Length: 139
Length: 139
DNA sequence: TTTAATTTTGTACTAATTACAATTTTAAAA
DNA sequence: TTTTAAAATTGTAATTAGTACAAAATTAAA
Ligand SMILES: [Mn+2]
Ligand SMILES: [Mn+2]
Ligand SMILES: [Zn+2]
Ligand SMILES: [Zn+2]
Image (cartoon, rainbow over the protein chains, first blue to last red):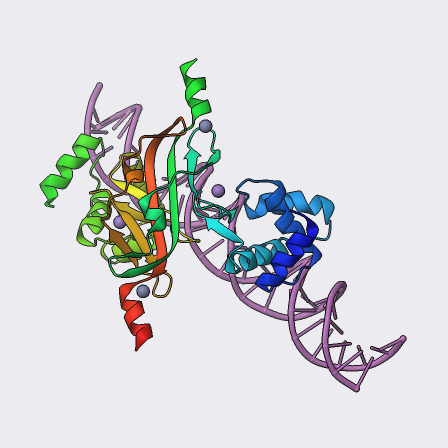
């Protein structure tokens, strides 16, 4: 995703493209991970020494409101964030703590209504032992 | 669930039935909700004035280890707890904040393995506007 | 009754997040 | 270009959920 594309996307969403905002957004494009606020801050502050952690919080909240990102509640002590692209679910390994994207479809993900309630977001995560950790244990 | 049944269950699970532990457990049986640590503490401290919040934390951690309770990560700022009975998913209304149990089955809930990873827990929650809040909005 | 193990309690601490006012930046108006 | 107002960023302080830990209390075995 090029700079122009980002600026175009921001314009569509009504987001003013400050340097900090663009850098936070680029973090998600360049690192397809599920970072915490702290991870983003620690990474960007190297490039933007004046960066404030508050700006990172503000920016992430804005991006979530504008549906560019979603919050992932999968850790007990901190919120992680995910770039919204294709719908997917998550798998967290309780051994190595890694979080994997799982592109497996399920009736729940398409569900727009349940028991009379209007459904707007779907959050699914699985916990267990990942492929790699299973192999390590066998050895 | 009677006192004897609780004591029997605790014995099976290897939990010593201290007064505090039994009271915390009874909270879940008598209130089929999804309480936070603070809600449990505030409720029980009326009956047990010497109760420490640390005991509530310790007890809930123990109950989770022993698979009597599960942690629900659905709020950004606090963990909620759920009595483990029938498998179910949750719906949270973003208007009134209420959390509903949804007993709707889905292939994901039965999934024991995905992409080579061994699945041990399934967590599914939906966000939206609940039936009641939809009605209020229409008026 | 002694003793050791377990549980509970209270306090201090940590760390994520929020509140908020001051400063800086941006962009429009004059 | 200069003035002005709005928006964004920053830094600090406050809040709050959760944890660490040692002392006190309880329990149960020796
Ligand atoms: Mn993801
Ligand atoms: Mn439930
Ligand atoms: Zn792993
Ligand atoms: Zn509602």
